[in-house]
Amino acid sequence: MEKLLEEFSVGLFFWQTILFGLLLFLLWKFAWKPILNAVNDREEGIKNALDAAEAAKKEMQNVTADSEKLLKEARAERDSLLKEAREIKEGIISEAKEQAKVEGDKMIKQAQAAIESEKKAAVADIKSQVANLSVEIAEKVIKEELSDKKKQQKLVEDMLGDIKLN
Amino acid sequence: MRKTFFTRFFLVATLLLAQFTFANEQEHEAEEHGKDLKTEIKEYISHHLKDSHDFSLFSYTKENGEHKYVGFPLPVILWDNGLKVFSSSKFHHGETIAEVDGNHYKLYHSKIYKTDSEGTINYDEEHHPTNVKPLDFSITKNVVMIIVTGLLMLWLFTSLAKSYAKNNGIPTGAGRFFEPIVLYIRDDIARPNIGEKRYKKYMPFLLTIFFFIWFLNIFGLTPLGINVTGNIAITFALALMTFLITNFTGTKDYWMHQFNPLGNTMPWYAKIPLYIILVPIEILGLFIKPFSLLIRLYANMQAGHIVLMSLIGLMFIFKSWLGSPLSFFLAFAISLIEILVALLQAYIFTMLSALYFGFASEDHHEEGHENDPELVHL
Image (cartoon, rainbow over all chains, first blue to last red; front, side, top):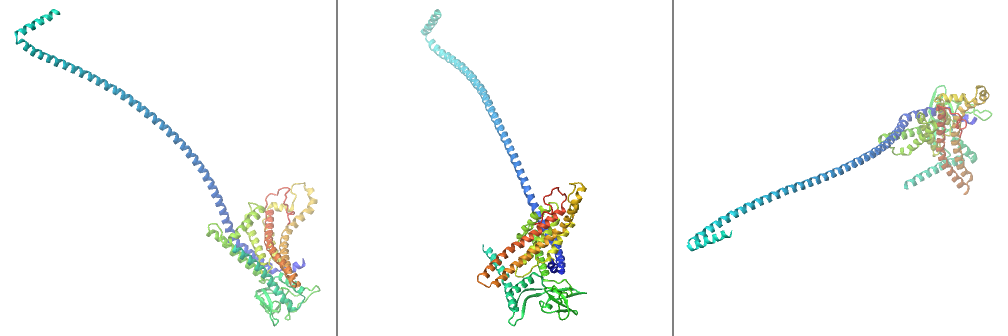
């Protein structure tokens, strides 16, 4: 103990206290404060970045879920639209077919009627022409026949004969 | 790979150099004085452990017997009826008497005494000088090393602080080595011992004291032959800081604990006989805690230097092919251990300071606390 006290130097103690105090102050101000702040900021930055990443991940999940839902809805809508369209198409086709059939029938009937009337007209025409031709033929034959007396006679007789038969 | 080799080589070379410088010096001195080698070594070691008024790296003896010192003198500042400032070169390493303003001073065993013009030193029966010792505020070797360490720390840590701003929060260069240590002190020393809420205000002190002790311990292992942290005045000043901070930041609970350690666990009349013993112990503990800090650091560094130098000295005492290499390798091994001790002592000082701060700034005193201050004395 005595040796320790003897070794103790007041001057050295004085300088140590002064210099250490000064060093502590300077380092406090110019080193430890900025270092600890910078480290703190960095750690907070990392923490914030991690939080943000976590939030972004959650957001991502939400978005994915949303888009899946949307996709599902869209798909359902497409399906229903397609179904509707098919129905409409079928409706149109069947309606068109029916209409076409009706129209066709109608046309066929008209055609038939026209044909019928044409036929009748043609037949009537043929009949009148035949009648005319036969009158002309009969006229020519009669003229020929009646040029000769005998023949006139015979004709009258034949005609009379026919009447008898009647 | 190459780099680590060079680092190792450099380390080994430094350690070897430290030993050779010392050894050279010793041999010359022994030869010159023709003294007993053992006494010579003993004197050298005790001289080395002390502070000195000049910064001498080593000394040798010329052929004509002249003692030559390599180093530089330092200013001597004395308070002896007025301020006296002169260069330590006036002492010629204790060989001559310095005369300043009509006063005569002599350097004797690293202390300055006021003498007559002859340089007579009077002794009492126990061979202690009885001459007047003027107040000595000299810039000694230790003061120089404190300044050098201080400047080194300022440079290192301000540049680390600046590198954050420059490099977007990432340290560069030497800062990459020191930043984890700073973080270690924060996360593993300050936070657990002081508590999340209060550790911040103690951080500058803990960081400063850790690096200060560590750097000076490491400097003590260099061939410069300095022994700052093994000086009782230094460790006293450091421990005093811890003591003052502990008690000035002490909360009400802390002081309550000092004077009423048992709290409300028993009626007051039961406490009286216990407190006759307990309170003095608590109050003694206030002083024992920092005292243990100062003695621990002092003794460890002092012992390390003594062991290391004694082992080197053994080389010259053995002077044999077996003994000398053996003590050489022993000294080498101790050097390596001392590097560890340098860090360890800095850590322990910081750790215990943090622990004491933790006790002092604690708000609630939990009943049946396991870490009672008295029980934690490493």
